[in-house]
Image 1 (tube, rainbow, N blue to C red):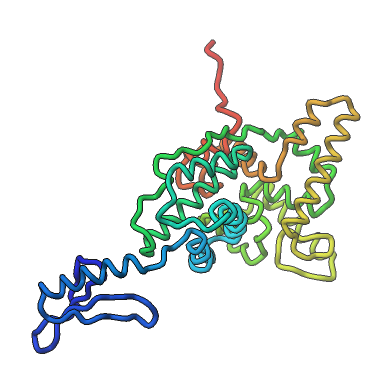
Image 2 (image 1 turned 90 degrees about the horizontal axis):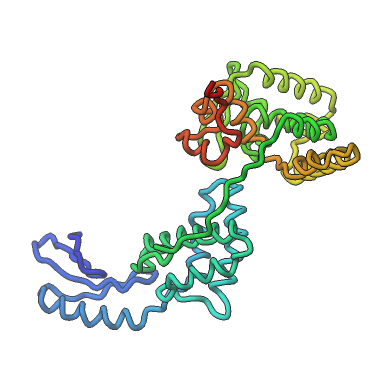
Length: 346
């Protein structure tokens, strides 16, 4: 079939050498309307049919596009990203679906600005909604649902300050001491390998090969191989010894008191309980500053602690390598929180 630059015009060269033209009316099964072999007459008919088709074709709304994106593209993403997107899609459906679904062609930059204002009290969420809208709109453009420019263009989100919480060894040990064995093992594992909580929980004994801990990150698919030595070797040996005490066996490295894999929800509950117990103990010891630092700690901050600990000894590039970043700048922008160690001027 000969390609045409005119939308919905199909050109076919027959074996006889004669060229025939057709109007692609779409639909399932696909319907093509013959326009004949005379190019001039075919173009006239094409013009008439294009006008009719444009006036009768139903307008696609954004809610329909979200539904299609969710079925087609979402399954390709990491499970944690899928969960975040599904949560954000609820907000987008609420904003663009009430009182009636917003036609794709009628969404303007001003609507994106209103979306941001709608979630101004939650700036991180607002920025995330804007990014997801842009992704879905670009998907719609690629699928031919619209030729309109992405309405997020030129609309800036909220400027967010980077997280500056630095987990000192004192804070870490205070929380660690209040945890039971499963939490202590999970914390130590996360601290020495510098991976996201979800990646820590996914690790199994099968990821240990030839003296290396092999990691494939769920979010970015980056691969990292960490030598099993030092504290990591100690932690893995301790985990193995604890697992041997249980009747039930799982290949997971992070397991509960029965030997079964830890879930995110259980890990979060264990961590929050230990964190609060540590903060209360600090307050009882008249150390309110330490209590505040303890309560500010997230489990996710252990990734930043690993980056800082590594950078102080081996440099920023080593920290970036451990975290699976292609760019040192990414590590510096989001994870290195302590600053460089320098000498005095004199």
